[in-house]
Each structure stands twice: as C-alpha cells, then as structure tokens.
Image 1 (cartoon, rainbow, N blue to C red):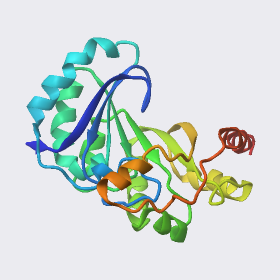
Image 2: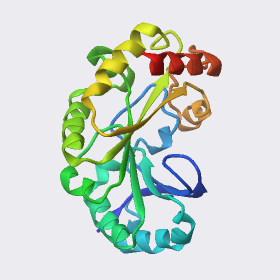
Image 3: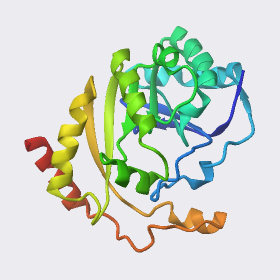
Image 4: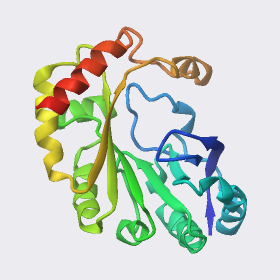
Amino acid sequence: MQGAVASIETLTSVDGPGIRTIVFMSGCKKRCLYCHNPEMFKMGKPNYTDKMLVDRLVRYKNYFKRGGGITFSGGEPLLQTDFLISVCKKLKNEGIHIAIDTAGDFTGNIEELLKYVDLVILDIKHIKKNDYEFLTNSKMRKVEEFIKILNKSGVDVYLRQVIIPNFNDNLKYIKGLKEYIKKIKNVKDIAFLPYHKLGSEKYLELGLEYKMSGVPEMDKDKCDALYQEFLNL
C-alpha cells in the first residue's frame, strides 16, 4: 500500500491536543479561494509505503505521552482513505492518538477509517450552499454526507471556521453557524480563525491567480469579539 505525502512536521502544538506530528497528504479537489497550501492541490506521486510511514512516525511516540499524537492534514487526507486505513491500524496498535484534519471531501471506506481515528478536525467552509460553492469551487453535498457518517462513528470533533471580512464576519452568519452545527455530534471544541494572506506568494510561484488579493486580512480583535458573541448565543 502506497501513499503520497507532501511533508511531515514534527513536534508541533497545533492541529490537535498535545505535542503532535503533522503528516500533510498531497492532493485536494477543492479550490478554496483562501487556501494557503496551493502546492498541495495536485496529487503527488506515491512516496511512502504504509510500513515506511508508520516506521517513521513511531519514532516520535515518546513525545505523545501527555495527550499528543499524529494528525493527518493536507491537502485533503481523505482522498487517500485506503492508505490511511492501513497506516492508522498500525498506529493504533502502537497506542498513538490519531486526528484527521479535513474538509469532509472523501473517497473510499470512511466508516472503516473512522474506527481507528480519535479526533476529526472539520473545517466549516460555509453554511449556505451557494456561498460554500463560491468559496470552495465544489459541491456542498459531499461534506453533508461526511457529517452523517461522522455522527454515526462517535468520534470526537473539533470545528474550525475561517472568518473573512465582508463575507461571514457578521452576527447573522454566526447565528446561522450556531444553528447549523447543532446537527454535528460529539463537538468538543470550536475555533474561529481570522483570514490571512500568508500563502498568497505561493500562488505567484506556481503561476496561479490569488483571487482574494483585494480582501483585507481579518482583524484578530474583531474575530475574537465575534467568537465571544458566538459563545454567548
């Protein structure tokens, strides 16, 4: 079994609880306007077998003793579900906490994969069909299907919402968001992330148009204030 891994980042404190190793899987069908990893749009050539990847990841096992673990991110990791099933089975035998950072765009047997996953970090792109499709250049149907499967799995969920100026940085949207996420079970954490342009230079390097160039970065204080409004609803 082989998979395409873009990069591996070790000993971080983001993308899940505790000290973590992040495996960035290459390939993504979405073309989110604000994506900061456009170099991962295309699926790379397979460069790891399941055994090779597991052998590398278990080296960091001692750092995970206080609640840390491994997070598979991307790109969209769920486009390589069969590979992840094989890898995650082996990691669970090592007693390692596993998280998947995803937008819910999947192929393969997701029900089987979720048996070996402790946490799903789900990006909420938008709660309205038309705005979702405008923002991601993809259909909302797939993430709705994923949420139904996720609910049945019983896996813990963290939610993330990017806040974009003049797009969803308003009380009406966050009220709708509060209602929308009621259908998602086992939500343990929700984070608002202010839109930024840290990945914009990559588009120039890749010869791609950065379609958010005219949008200012989100003010962090306003984002934090919206989050407090959200919590108080």
